[in-house]
Length: 216
Image (cartoon, rainbow, N blue to C red; front, side, top):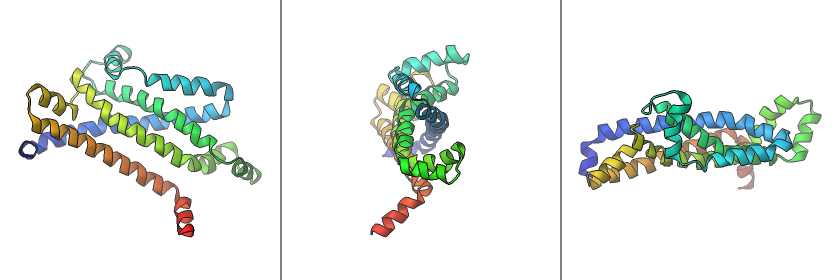
């Protein structure tokens, strides 16, 4: 505890860097996964390719992907952009299936009713299909968030600063307080991400609150 109190500034600085490296890929991955998932639901012959192909991306070892990114992007090995792009790929790998599952969970009668009311395909997607898919997508995003917070720590091995530095330095120099700080800060960050996603889901699904209120 004493080590943590003496190094709060360092922990905060590394924590903010960790938020950037793990939070931005979640947003980018979500933005990319939604149209990819929509395409998979519209073109059935593509569904297997997109779901399986995106899922296979998750099997690439994170350290190998971090090292590969500079060769693909033309960046330096220490550029944080490598981590952001790599983690975005992992987020897409986890989210495409969730988006597909969420969009296909919309009841047919609801979709037909929207069409009968004159909704265009675009208006129906943003006004009916996507909102109803939010709970399923949010569940996938929560899994991706925990994974992202955990995997970003590995970037310390290639010299990109974040909370993983505390784990590696604490282990190499046998400083228990630094190790504990790294673990606690990572867990806390994962919990904060989870709460934010839950809050967003709660805000975007007002009908669920109405249903819960009527059934209470």
